[in-house]
Length: 456
Image (tube, rainbow, N blue to C red; front, side, top):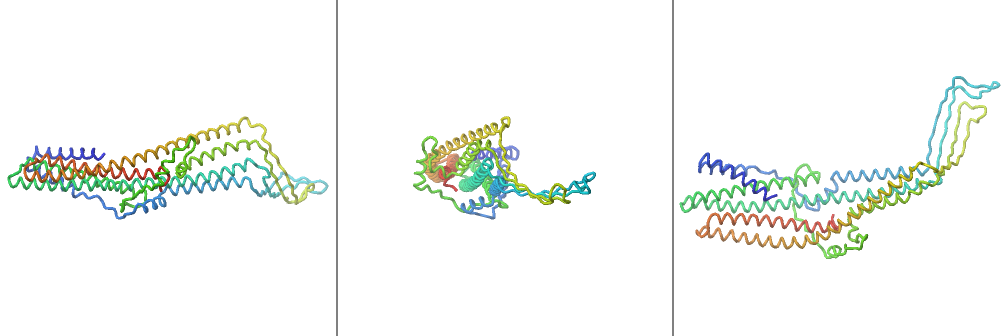
């Protein structure tokens, strides 16, 4: 992507300079190019007013990000569902008041049998004595609450990973800015020398324009890199719920202690065995909890066929009193409900629960396979990135030495202007390669800690 931007920005600058050369002539083209350089230099990217360390960024994101609030709401909802399930198997008390108005009352031997206006108050007290299906749903709701808690932990993990990625992106893009700035200063020194030689008559206008063109291209790359840094800072600010871009203060060191390497090597368990280190990952904990919940719901399906026994106590009063009924009375009932035939409803529910178990098992197996692959890939990435970084740093040091030698040779007349420009470009690309290699090394170490569940 950076190479593509360099090509596009360089082409745009060359097109504009070429048009100016044809229309205005050599001197006017030089003025036009200088004006473009001034425009690039004057366009300053806003500077963030807040800077945070890596640990503070992770803590703030986990604490303030809206995803954490959503996860907390899911836990609260699971708590509410558990309370509802428990209430169904506990004491229930309800009152009922009924007023009845007839077209006329009923009397017998000057005594009121049924009054025209009646008021009846009843208290209904119910207590399940044997309710295996309801008890099973209570246990399932408690399991679902545990799933919600694990899901909240995984959401916090994802938020921390996104914040770490944004933090590392800011660091990497600032390294690119430093590399392009160094290349720009080198190109500026070369341009000043070429202009000085041209003014003294020992150089040429062509060499001056080539040096000026390279300086303009580097100005463009610096501007594009600074904008990329600002966008990364804005992304970090969004994750931290900050009102503006946030800058970084330190470079995190993701040390890889020996126990992590040992844990990474011990993840190759037998089939069906996730390996102890991988059990620390919140996503695998979540998938395992979901599978356990689905298996519990399926295993409780047989309880839907058991009877339901309930005790009901109903005291009541009626006004006015009637001839054949006392004014205050009560009754105690034992109600037994036995499921007999439901036209396949319970069988359909069981098949649906079996499908949920199959999906949860497949999801967990896929996540486990992916987790093992991530551990292996992270281990290899660490080794590869270390070799890549060593080579990139050696290449950058060699490229800077070439620039110094070519500049000395150019001053002595032993090297051409094109050789100087080529050396500067190679040094700039080598510096960018170092920034990329450093970022790859940091991310590889972070990926291993993440794959083993050691981050955050």
